[in-house]
Image (cartoon, rainbow, N blue to C red):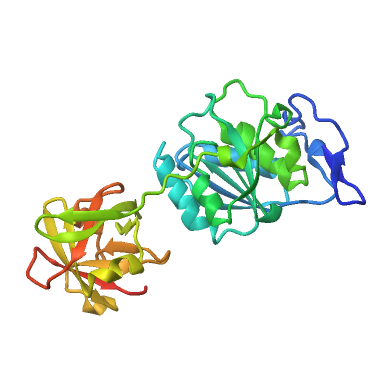
Length: 325
């Protein structure tokens, strides 16, 4: 436990004991007296998980947070990351984090929960932000987007965790109570032992590569990194990457060859055609006006899309590049 002294440094006030986060009170308040500090350090907690919304997991985790730190505001970034898909969670976190207020981010896509994988805290932006999650590559891209890691700690201080009959719900038993501890002004140094920031597993982000095709010449191999709810297929390239291939692009997706004509708005897209859009994150995304590019092209995250210079000739269908949203 900590309190802020006149020098501004957190110092131990009440030594936490095993199970200090155990339930207490008629309604089940989580030992609130043990989590009261003189100055609240963080007021906002953002959540990103693969828990979905069909079960009670998200609600329970948020209840633990609010019970221990009633002042915090909670933002649900998403709980729809595909189950066990660490890379998809990492990319979603990287897309979202630039818009998240200062505070704490809890990210949980954790197929190794309960194993020897580390639970960690990563401090960024001079202490204005802290990422909590498993050390499995999930946090790396978001941390990089936030300017890189200042310090990192393993969440090895079990006095700050909830006692539980099993080890498979780290969101409830570890990440939520540690987030509440930090939100209430707890010192980051108290969550566990400090670790080398270079030892934190990096994010899994695909990069484009050069491609030579016997029929289409020199080009670039891209990858679908994300298919959103509308069927838009984001690629791992931006407009500067495709610019060298001219005003007409040739896209090769498996055996399907498509022409990609550069346009500036939806009205220039031929009905039923595919558009290559500069999306709201500044990446090129394949889309269909009021339709699903994923269904039309029969592609999904992880599939390859080859880009070559187009010749304007006839192909299976036109594809256009829409600049702006």
